[in-house]
Length: 284
Image (cartoon, rainbow, N blue to C red; front, side, top):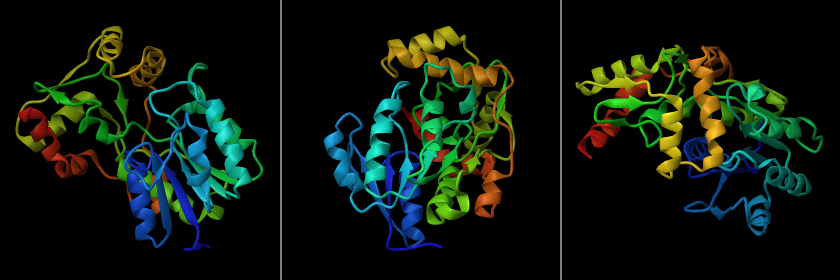
Protein backbone atom coordinates (compact mmCIF):
# COMPACT_ATOMS: atom_id res chain seq x y z
CA UNK A 1 0.00 0.00 0.00
CA UNK A 2 1.18 3.54 -0.69
CA UNK A 3 0.63 6.62 1.43
CA UNK A 4 0.82 10.01 -0.24
CA UNK A 5 1.23 11.67 3.15
CA UNK A 6 4.62 10.07 3.74
CA UNK A 7 7.85 11.81 2.82
CA UNK A 8 10.96 10.34 1.19
CA UNK A 9 14.30 11.91 1.98
CA UNK A 10 16.38 11.80 -1.20
CA UNK A 11 20.06 12.09 -0.40
CA UNK A 12 22.19 13.31 -3.27
CA UNK A 13 18.97 14.98 -4.30
CA UNK A 14 20.57 17.21 -6.92
CA UNK A 15 22.71 14.39 -8.31
CA UNK A 16 22.45 12.04 -11.24
CA UNK A 17 19.96 9.55 -9.83
CA UNK A 18 18.69 11.49 -6.82
CA UNK A 19 17.20 14.29 -8.89
CA UNK A 20 15.40 11.72 -11.04
CA UNK A 21 14.13 9.79 -8.03
CA UNK A 22 12.71 12.97 -6.50
CA UNK A 23 10.99 13.97 -9.72
CA UNK A 24 9.49 10.53 -10.28
CA UNK A 25 8.21 10.31 -6.70
CA UNK A 26 6.45 13.64 -7.07
CA UNK A 27 4.97 12.48 -10.39
CA UNK A 28 3.57 9.49 -8.49
CA UNK A 29 1.91 11.79 -5.98
CA UNK A 30 4.36 11.29 -3.11
CA UNK A 31 6.35 13.85 -1.21
CA UNK A 32 10.09 14.03 -1.85
CA UNK A 33 12.59 16.11 0.12
CA UNK A 34 15.89 16.55 -1.69
CA UNK A 35 19.00 16.90 0.45
CA UNK A 36 22.45 18.01 -0.62
CA UNK A 37 25.14 20.55 0.17
CA UNK A 38 23.88 22.87 -2.56
CA UNK A 39 20.61 23.61 -4.32
CA UNK A 40 18.35 21.10 -2.55
CA UNK A 41 15.26 21.43 -0.39
CA UNK A 42 17.37 21.04 2.74
CA UNK A 43 21.07 21.39 3.45
CA UNK A 44 22.71 18.03 4.11
CA UNK A 45 26.41 17.52 4.73
CA UNK A 46 27.73 14.09 5.72
CA UNK A 47 30.52 15.77 7.68
CA UNK A 48 28.15 18.03 9.61
CA UNK A 49 25.74 15.94 11.74
CA UNK A 50 23.97 19.13 12.75
CA UNK A 51 22.35 19.15 9.29
CA UNK A 52 20.90 15.66 9.70
CA UNK A 53 17.95 16.19 12.10
CA UNK A 54 16.19 18.72 9.89
CA UNK A 55 16.63 16.48 6.86
CA UNK A 56 15.07 13.56 8.74
CA UNK A 57 12.20 15.45 10.34
CA UNK A 58 8.92 13.76 9.36
CA UNK A 59 10.61 11.35 6.96
CA UNK A 60 9.26 7.81 6.52
CA UNK A 61 11.68 6.46 3.90
CA UNK A 62 15.11 7.31 2.51
CA UNK A 63 16.94 7.04 -0.80
CA UNK A 64 20.45 6.52 0.54
CA UNK A 65 23.38 7.81 -1.52
CA UNK A 66 26.66 7.64 0.38
CA UNK A 67 29.41 10.30 0.26
CA UNK A 68 30.90 10.62 -3.21
CA UNK A 69 34.59 10.39 -4.14
CA UNK A 70 35.35 8.59 -0.88
CA UNK A 71 36.17 5.03 0.04
CA UNK A 72 35.76 5.26 3.83
CA UNK A 73 32.36 6.35 5.10
CA UNK A 74 30.75 3.38 6.88
CA UNK A 75 30.98 5.07 10.28
CA UNK A 76 29.30 8.26 9.05
CA UNK A 77 26.52 6.27 7.41
CA UNK A 78 26.00 4.04 10.45
CA UNK A 79 25.62 7.08 12.73
CA UNK A 80 23.13 8.57 10.28
CA UNK A 81 21.14 5.34 10.14
CA UNK A 82 21.02 5.27 13.95
CA UNK A 83 19.51 8.72 13.83
CA UNK A 84 17.13 7.67 11.06
CA UNK A 85 15.90 4.76 13.16
CA UNK A 86 15.29 7.09 16.07
CA UNK A 87 13.36 9.46 13.80
CA UNK A 88 10.94 6.70 12.82
CA UNK A 89 12.16 5.93 9.31
CA UNK A 90 10.45 2.80 7.99
CA UNK A 91 12.43 1.94 4.85
CA UNK A 92 15.80 2.69 3.21
CA UNK A 93 16.71 2.08 -0.43
CA UNK A 94 20.49 2.06 -0.83
CA UNK A 95 22.31 2.93 -4.05
CA UNK A 96 25.20 0.50 -4.04
CA UNK A 97 27.34 -0.73 -6.97
CA UNK A 98 27.39 -3.77 -9.22
CA UNK A 99 29.55 -6.51 -7.75
CA UNK A 100 29.62 -4.85 -4.34
CA UNK A 101 30.27 -8.20 -2.67
CA UNK A 102 33.59 -8.27 -4.55
CA UNK A 103 34.66 -4.74 -3.59
CA UNK A 104 38.13 -4.30 -2.11
CA UNK A 105 38.18 -4.20 1.70
CA UNK A 106 39.41 -0.59 1.54
CA UNK A 107 36.04 0.43 0.08
CA UNK A 108 32.99 0.68 2.36
CA UNK A 109 30.28 -0.16 -0.20
CA UNK A 110 29.66 -3.66 1.09
CA UNK A 111 29.98 -2.56 4.73
CA UNK A 112 26.91 -0.33 4.33
CA UNK A 113 24.93 -3.21 2.83
CA UNK A 114 25.82 -5.42 5.79
CA UNK A 115 24.96 -2.63 8.22
CA UNK A 116 21.49 -2.30 6.68
CA UNK A 117 20.97 -6.07 6.72
CA UNK A 118 21.66 -6.17 10.44
CA UNK A 119 19.07 -3.57 11.39
CA UNK A 120 15.55 -4.36 12.54
CA UNK A 121 14.16 -0.84 13.01
CA UNK A 122 13.39 -0.46 9.31
CA UNK A 123 13.33 -2.48 6.09
CA UNK A 124 15.69 -1.96 3.20
CA UNK A 125 16.29 -2.60 -0.49
CA UNK A 126 19.63 -2.53 -2.31
CA UNK A 127 20.33 -1.37 -5.86
CA UNK A 128 23.54 -2.60 -7.49
CA UNK A 129 23.50 -0.95 -10.91
CA UNK A 130 25.87 -1.34 -13.82
CA UNK A 131 27.93 1.62 -15.00
CA UNK A 132 25.55 4.39 -16.00
CA UNK A 133 25.27 5.49 -19.61
CA UNK A 134 25.46 9.09 -18.45
CA UNK A 135 29.20 8.59 -17.78
CA UNK A 136 29.69 9.11 -21.51
CA UNK A 137 27.59 12.26 -21.79
CA UNK A 138 29.00 14.13 -18.80
CA UNK A 139 32.42 14.88 -17.35
CA UNK A 140 33.18 11.31 -16.23
CA UNK A 141 34.06 9.75 -19.61
CA UNK A 142 33.64 12.57 -22.13
CA UNK A 143 34.44 12.43 -25.81
CA UNK A 144 37.58 14.56 -26.12
CA UNK A 145 39.12 15.14 -29.54
CA UNK A 146 37.06 12.27 -30.89
CA UNK A 147 38.06 9.69 -28.26
CA UNK A 148 36.73 8.12 -25.07
CA UNK A 149 39.65 7.41 -22.78
CA UNK A 150 39.22 4.62 -20.22
CA UNK A 151 41.06 1.34 -19.55
CA UNK A 152 38.88 -1.73 -20.17
CA UNK A 153 41.07 -4.10 -22.24
CA UNK A 154 38.14 -4.62 -24.55
CA UNK A 155 35.84 -5.89 -21.81
CA UNK A 156 32.08 -5.42 -21.97
CA UNK A 157 29.54 -3.88 -19.61
CA UNK A 158 25.73 -3.72 -19.64
CA UNK A 159 25.61 0.06 -19.31
CA UNK A 160 22.34 1.28 -17.79
CA UNK A 161 20.42 4.53 -18.10
CA UNK A 162 20.20 6.49 -14.84
CA UNK A 163 16.49 6.87 -15.61
CA UNK A 164 16.13 3.11 -15.23
CA UNK A 165 18.03 3.07 -11.94
CA UNK A 166 15.77 5.81 -10.63
CA UNK A 167 12.65 4.02 -11.86
CA UNK A 168 13.59 0.86 -9.95
CA UNK A 169 14.42 2.89 -6.85
CA UNK A 170 11.07 4.66 -6.98
CA UNK A 171 9.14 1.40 -7.01
CA UNK A 172 10.93 0.30 -3.83
CA UNK A 173 10.08 3.63 -2.20
CA UNK A 174 6.47 3.84 -3.37
CA UNK A 175 5.68 0.36 -2.03
CA UNK A 176 8.47 -0.67 0.40
CA UNK A 177 6.58 -3.69 1.70
CA UNK A 178 6.80 -5.31 -1.74
CA UNK A 179 10.59 -4.98 -1.86
CA UNK A 180 11.76 -5.86 1.65
CA UNK A 181 15.31 -7.21 1.49
CA UNK A 182 15.35 -7.04 -2.31
CA UNK A 183 18.65 -6.79 -4.16
CA UNK A 184 18.28 -5.47 -7.69
CA UNK A 185 21.01 -5.03 -10.30
CA UNK A 186 19.65 -2.57 -12.88
CA UNK A 187 21.44 -3.13 -16.19
CA UNK A 188 21.04 -2.32 -19.84
CA UNK A 189 19.64 -4.79 -22.37
CA UNK A 190 23.00 -5.51 -24.03
CA UNK A 191 26.63 -5.84 -22.97
CA UNK A 192 28.80 -3.41 -24.92
CA UNK A 193 32.49 -2.70 -25.18
CA UNK A 194 33.51 0.95 -25.05
CA UNK A 195 34.51 0.63 -28.71
CA UNK A 196 30.92 -0.35 -29.49
CA UNK A 197 29.69 2.58 -27.42
CA UNK A 198 31.98 4.87 -29.41
CA UNK A 199 30.56 3.50 -32.68
CA UNK A 200 27.00 4.16 -31.51
CA UNK A 201 27.84 7.73 -30.50
CA UNK A 202 29.66 8.29 -33.80
CA UNK A 203 26.62 7.08 -35.73
CA UNK A 204 24.33 9.44 -33.81
CA UNK A 205 26.47 12.57 -34.12
CA UNK A 206 27.79 11.83 -37.61
CA UNK A 207 31.46 12.08 -36.72
CA UNK A 208 34.31 9.75 -35.76
CA UNK A 209 34.57 8.56 -32.14
CA UNK A 210 37.09 5.96 -30.97
CA UNK A 211 38.05 4.22 -27.73
CA UNK A 212 41.47 5.03 -26.28
CA UNK A 213 42.07 1.90 -24.17
CA UNK A 214 44.75 3.53 -22.06
CA UNK A 215 47.07 1.90 -19.53
CA UNK A 216 45.25 1.76 -16.16
CA UNK A 217 48.12 3.27 -14.18
CA UNK A 218 48.39 6.18 -16.58
CA UNK A 219 44.65 6.81 -16.47
CA UNK A 220 44.38 6.64 -12.70
CA UNK A 221 47.53 8.70 -12.22
CA UNK A 222 46.18 11.34 -14.58
CA UNK A 223 42.86 11.51 -12.73
CA UNK A 224 44.65 12.09 -9.43
CA UNK A 225 47.18 14.54 -10.84
CA UNK A 226 44.39 16.51 -12.50
CA UNK A 227 42.50 16.80 -9.22
CA UNK A 228 39.48 14.85 -10.48
CA UNK A 229 39.69 12.32 -7.63
CA UNK A 230 41.56 12.14 -4.31
CA UNK A 231 44.57 9.84 -4.14
CA UNK A 232 42.85 7.22 -1.97
CA UNK A 233 40.09 6.88 -4.59
CA UNK A 234 42.55 5.11 -6.87
CA UNK A 235 41.55 1.78 -5.35
CA UNK A 236 37.96 2.40 -6.43
CA UNK A 237 38.90 3.31 -9.99
CA UNK A 238 41.18 0.30 -10.27
CA UNK A 239 38.45 -2.01 -9.04
CA UNK A 240 35.70 -0.60 -11.27
CA UNK A 241 37.75 -0.68 -14.46
CA UNK A 242 39.43 -3.94 -13.49
CA UNK A 243 36.06 -5.66 -13.20
CA UNK A 244 35.35 -4.89 -16.84
CA UNK A 245 38.91 -5.61 -17.99
CA UNK A 246 38.82 -9.06 -16.40
CA UNK A 247 35.64 -10.01 -18.25
CA UNK A 248 33.48 -9.73 -15.14
CA UNK A 249 31.49 -6.65 -16.12
CA UNK A 250 27.77 -6.51 -15.49
CA UNK A 251 25.45 -8.55 -17.68
CA UNK A 252 21.91 -7.93 -18.91
CA UNK A 253 19.13 -9.18 -16.63
CA UNK A 254 15.40 -8.68 -16.20
CA UNK A 255 15.46 -6.61 -13.01
CA UNK A 256 14.41 -3.32 -14.61
CA UNK A 257 11.47 -4.90 -16.44
CA UNK A 258 10.53 -7.09 -13.46
CA UNK A 259 10.30 -4.09 -11.14
CA UNK A 260 9.05 -1.34 -13.45
CA UNK A 261 7.07 -3.31 -16.02
CA UNK A 262 9.05 -2.00 -19.00
CA UNK A 263 12.34 -3.01 -20.63
CA UNK A 264 15.54 -1.05 -19.97
CA UNK A 265 16.63 1.74 -22.30
CA UNK A 266 19.05 0.77 -25.07
CA UNK A 267 22.29 2.68 -25.56
CA UNK A 268 21.10 3.66 -29.04
CA UNK A 269 18.00 5.35 -27.57
CA UNK A 270 20.09 6.98 -24.85
CA UNK A 271 22.56 8.30 -27.42
CA UNK A 272 19.82 9.77 -29.61
CA UNK A 273 18.30 11.45 -26.56
CA UNK A 274 21.64 12.94 -25.53
CA UNK A 275 23.28 13.77 -28.85
CA UNK A 276 23.46 17.42 -27.84
CA UNK A 277 25.90 16.56 -25.04
CA UNK A 278 28.55 15.34 -27.48
CA UNK A 279 27.89 18.25 -29.81
CA UNK A 280 28.63 20.60 -26.92
CA UNK A 281 31.75 18.64 -25.97
CA UNK A 282 33.06 18.89 -29.51
CA UNK A 283 32.46 22.64 -29.51
CA UNK A 284 34.66 23.21 -26.46
